[in-house]
Amino acid sequence: MPRTLFGHMKSSNVMKVVWLMDELGLEYERVDIGNVFGGLEEDDYRSKNPTSLVPTLVDGDFTLWESNAVLRYLCNAYAPDSSLYPADPKRRGVVDQWLDCQQTQLTRPQTVVFFQLIRTPLEKRDTQALETAIREAGRVWNWIETRLGEHDYICGSEMTIADIAWAVHGHRWLNMDFSRADLPNVKAWYERMLTHDSFRQKWAGPVT
Image 1 (tube, helix red, strand yellow):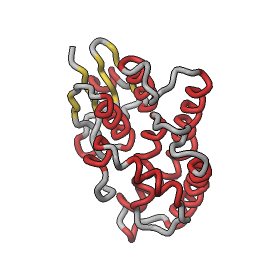
Image 2 (cartoon, rainbow, N blue to C red):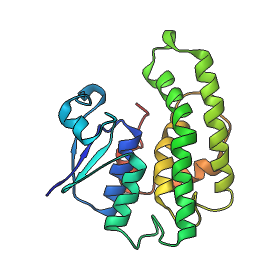
Image 3 (cartoon, rainbow, N blue to C red):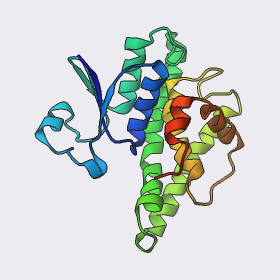
């Protein structure tokens, strides 16, 4: 049965999964849903994903949602020996830690920054909410700056799916138009991530 990913390409969570599937050389069909395409509240989609969010992966007779869960599944199913999601429990634990940190600590404030700067007309922006979100997200990016001062990638000397999860947000953070602290280690890491065709060819352009 075909492998199908449901989600539109402006979603950071869809970006992660598309990047990994391209990185692994997996064949798949992507179906636009959400954002301007709508369809998230339709019964057929909600039967696959009750959250009415993207992405949702249908892999044969198996359905999975939550982007970081999908990243883990794809590595376990199709690249079990890959350093992208190491088998060693301690190394894998560190990857899981930073995957969860991205979702629980970064997503909320950076989403506010993104929607205020990119999706909200200037005259309708909530300046206080934007400033608070920049401060909160900036605090989290400072953690990554420190990590990347110790090694080339977030979890060590090799790229993992934690880097994929953070890099799609790093692209937005570094390329949106606002005043931010200088993050030389994050910038150098971002340039390393851009050497991957599966990232650069799809998302290296303007933030939209």
